[in-house]
Length: 84
Image (tube, rainbow, N blue to C red; front, side, top):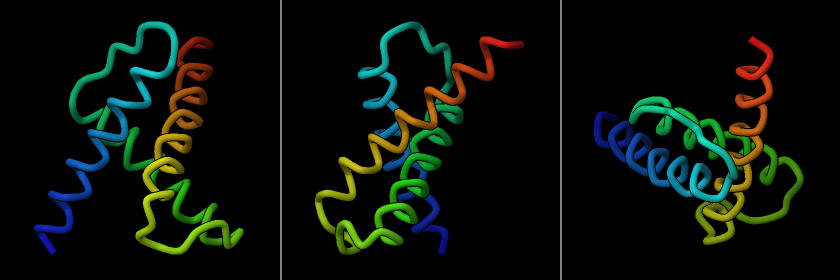
């Protein structure tokens, strides 16, 4: 249980870093915000891709979909932060 949480945070951080690197502009986020961004993208991609039947669980396509999901989450975050 604890190991799964640690792995989710590390994978989320890596996915969040990749998404932040691909998104133009300056995203000033710390470690935890970046990890949460990546985990949100992974959840978005997992449920979206699984619901649509695009790829099986655990496939390498899941990484790409997680990054795309994190980019979408980062775009939404930037739009909300810009309005405030």
